[in-house]
Length: 344
Ligand code: TXA
Ligand code: MG
Image 1 (tube, helix red, strand yellow):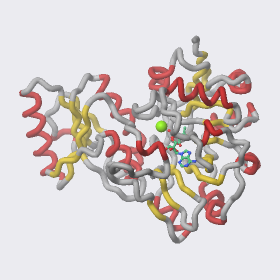
Image 2 (image 1 turned 90 degrees about the horizontal axis):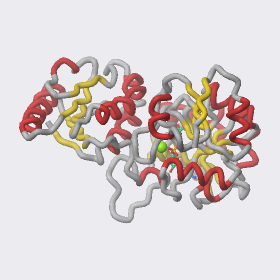
Image 3 (image 1 turned 90 degrees about the vertical axis):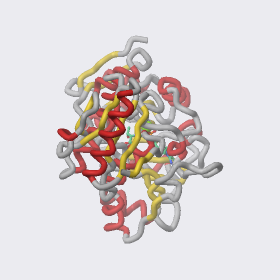
């Protein structure tokens, strides 16, 4: 298949027509790039799963560009949802509602709920408005790999497999939206993201984390967001997180690096601006500055992919603070490491 490339500064009419005809279009969003199809067209949505190699029980997020598009998709909007929508839409927040039967099962993964997001990025909102369609869109990467936060990575994974890619700049947040279940008495975070626990707590007073978050799932444990059970965000290199006091972590990583290099392994280190100069590995990259964790979120997935470009076998990463956006950063990093930690 030939993939058409359109710049985000061009007219999006052609991309909109592709969507109306049941095709697939990758678009920038403020979180990560998304792979879009008409959410109400079952065949089109099936092709998303094929292009990504994604398990079909993992439901998709439906993207809208005005509040009027929500009503037909859901059967109920709880007061919790109303409050969250008022404060955080448009933006990096996905809400789970009771689904209307209009939404195909292929979108909901067979659940009786549907996840909906109203993004703020002008390109995807323009695409939704020009096509007049709600768009189902997972991250525009091969399933399992780190999500794409720039055009080059979408092209690498999906060129030749989808109809069109819209080329824009780097994603602002770099981690996917916060997914929140609004169908119960208390809002529950199913996946941490750009809208943080603290921000939600401030407007709602109470918020819970899904108990399945923060650890490797046990035999038989079922997370409410089915996507959280799959291997995710993982480069080919094995990622290991080293925790502890900074000076000890640096010494430990350098000790392990020397040991593995002596065995012929190529070793990468994920450092920060503050620690970059202390490491001896083959590929030492800074993911951002500790003084501004939003920079770490913005670069995390791209930097993880760069260790594969450089052919690393192993990557040691620092652990990051888990407050604010740090919760989303550590959630993605833990998953990319398969929950492999070392204490320094
Ligand atoms: O920022 C984002 O959310 C990006 C951009 C493209 O919008 N999209 C994204 O989609 O991250 P995806 O498919 O990679 O992740 C969707 C997550 C999965 O963990 C999935 O299990 C969960 O949302 N999800 C979708 N529908 C759900 C539902 N009805 N109930 C619970 N979780 C749901
Ligand atoms: Mg994804």
